[in-house]
Length: 492
Image (cartoon, rainbow, N blue to C red; front, side, top):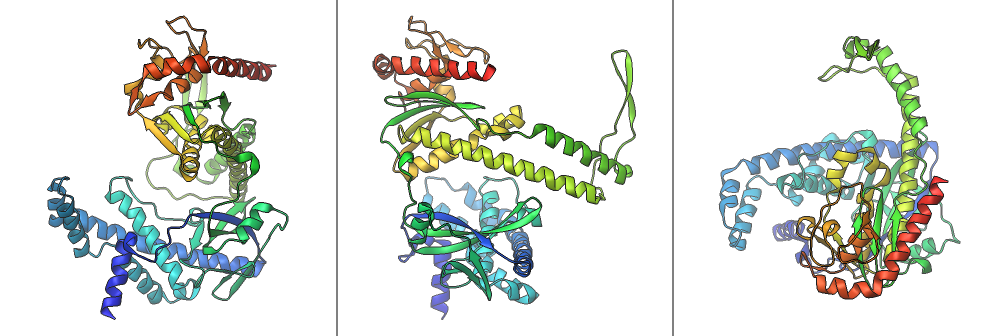
């Protein structure tokens, strides 16, 4: 028995050593669930239990992580040279084991905590408890590795999913419905949808339940993690070619072997700016009326020759806020508009991703900082989501057997480079590239995307760029003209 427990613990810490671990590809099929009021209440109760257990395990994991990080053994392990990989790894492992900071240990803690509370163990099974512990461990481990600053404890509105480990226990998919500890939920299946038909014909690895809010009311979905490859629509084929990219705040330029274009992000997506602004004003008035002590005093300010009264800012520190029914209803409407805007933007941006992959799956692009753009441009990044396009391109290209290569912007400086190798800075407002070699004018982003095709190991090979230019000049000029025509139509 002791040997079995030790092997389980070893495989939790090092899953790649498991000979029975599935290495087959997988994909996700999402289906809506049909529930009544009684099932809604039961699901809400189970998600509430899962949220509380997750927060409990997250707090325990954070405590153990702090003990590990401040221990003498951990500090000594950090001083070991990175060249001594085996000794460094063993030292970190010993520091973790001293405070039982491992996925297996936290899974055991989650099972004990659920049994001690009794009602949590009645609502969620052991497999879900262990998967919640794994989520908490991975979140805290990111902090330990320096990939995150801190962890976030969940509230009801931010806890949206629970999942099992296999399709044999816990949350299961059986006979086109979800079965979970006495709860049976029927799925709404479109039998004429070829994507759904393909997904249901594949073996199920495990299930995930999702809670989303539509119009202030919860809606339930099941995500089936399936074995195999997803269905591919005929129009969304992937070509085996090289594509150079230039990512911007509101559009993306790409140059493939025989095609180039400058595609806008989230084209035609409604922003609902007027509706959201109106709701925000309504929420602000409600807050000030119901919480007058949480705001500073109004003050007079001079604007030109006029003297106006400005509202006081919210007081710093933790305040108790009273929220009226009008405030809650306005907040629900605002969340619904933002959800619709995000859903529309994702749909349009996925079309952009598929259009690029039709021309090649070996992608080269500059390593731009979308997070830096967020600080500078704010709402524009939120509306256009260039980071989502970048991550989707990388995921789909690598899934199709291609590459997504990033190179340094400082070393290449594509927007400043000319075909003779000289570099001349441009202002951001200058959107046309006039090369010193005398070639025709090109759109700035398209020319940068063209040059990115010739970047190898953070170095721009100008000889390759000059050879490719003779063949791709008509493609670049046609894309530039298409861009100008599209913009002129928008102005009209």
